[in-house]
Length: 93
Image (tube, rainbow, N blue to C red; front, top):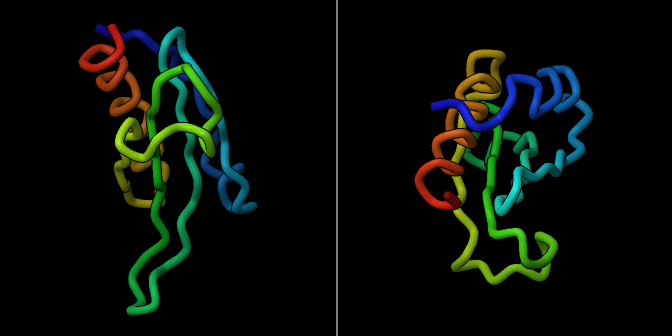
């Protein structure tokens, strides 16, 4: 079942500016950012985090946050949207 709309996060180009995107859907908040390659090289990645709608990201306890990484591609962005949707259905409903 789909809970979030397809336009719940901005297009892929938004994330090339390295700014986090924050959003929410009912009881769930989420944060998505483009992570640069690690020190060992590698690829840029989307880092998506969901957390309860109690406090802001910085004030939410780490154990309440759920982190997931995705390839930094348009397909990866679509996978982020699917993951957010599944997180809402599995954790926050």
